[in-house]
Structures are given as C-alpha cells and as structure tokens.
Amino acid sequence: MDIPMGLNYACFLACGIGLGKEMGKNDKRVRIFSALEVANLCGVVNQTAINWIKAGYLKAFTTPGGQFRVFAEDLIAFLEDRKMRIPPEINAGVNDSVDPGLILIVDDDPDLNTILKRMLERKLPDISVAQAFDGFEAGRIIAERHPALVFLDFDLPGINGKSLCLRIHSDPSIGKPSVISMTGIDTPDMREEMLAAGADDFFGKPLDFEAIIRRASELLASRAR
Image 1 (cartoon, rainbow, N blue to C red):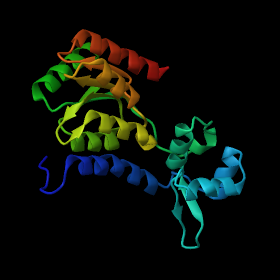
Image 2: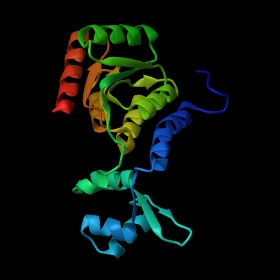
Image 3: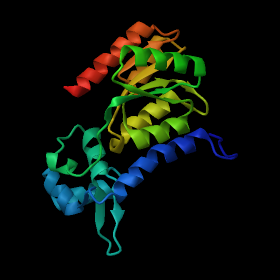
C-alpha cells in the first residue's frame, strides 16, 4: 500500500486500529453508560464518577443536554488500568473477542516474514497466518480481523514495536491479542522494555524458529482454556 506524502506511520497506525474502535462504537450492540450507571457499576457515588471524567481519567463525551456518556470499552480500559473488578454486565454487547485461529506477523523483512509464515502454517495447520510489513498495515489487520496472536518486530519503518505494542494493549475493542516481540537488539534492557510494554514474550534475532513456534502454540492454547 502506498503511503501518501506528509503522513507518517504513527498517524496511519492510529487510524488503522482506531477504525475498528469507531466501527464498534457505531454498532447498535455496543453499550453506552451515563455517569450514574458508571457509579452504580463501580460501587461509588455519582460525583466520584463525574470527578473521574472531569479529571480525564475516564474517557467520556457530552450529550447536547450536557450529560456525560461513557462507551463500554472506555470504561473497561479505565477499570483494567486501575486493577478494578470489571462487572460482567459491562461486557454485554462489546465485540472485544479475538479470532483464535488467526496469527499476524508484523515485520518489514519480507524474507523473515514469509519464512515464519510458512513454518507456522506447517507446524500449526489449523491456524491462518496474516502478514503485515509496516505499522499501518498491522493496524488495519488488527482492527478488522482481531488476531489472537501478533508476532511483532521492534524495528518497523516510522514507528517502533514498543509503540505498537502499547497501542494494542490500550485498546480493549481489539480483544487484547497475545504479543511475541522479535528484535535484533537482544539485550536485557530491550527485553525488559518490551515486556513492560505488554509483550507476552521476547525473542532475539536470528530467531530460534522451533522455540518461537512452540511458544506461540502455548499462548494460543492458554487463550483457549
């Protein structure tokens, strides 16, 4: 896909993943809560929920009548960030599931990307494998197809893998896929940085294909339980 002049990959990435979220918000099944409903769900008084919104902790929009409204996925993100219990009724109608049969490889090296794809298809024949070679393409596929697992290269054109990993894990509408980070910068600091950004595991290059596919199988199996 050609990238228009004047726009960078970070912009495209935001648009790519954001598209899925906006489509979800327009789906009639997605729930919207008033400040009072948020308060009741969280076990606090109405003013506390309003204070969360006014302080910018909880994303919300205002109706023409001046009332606050909160999308379900934004409330879920708020609760998860603060390690608070998520009442099951919040999830009603929110399309936040992943496709358990889909893996996405994000790496701008076409040879490595294709080799990994072929090996995954051979070792995990029941799994479909999609490919992306830049941040925008990755964002579009994640938003549209909700892969259960993302192989994520750190050194992508225009945006690093850490930024993309943080974006993936900050958007509950895409289902929070598992992430395996891959990079040629195989240092303890890089490992710690990517795991802190939300990656489930970290592999240095050149890749140990047997080990990385075994780990992929384990992550997929853990999601199925």
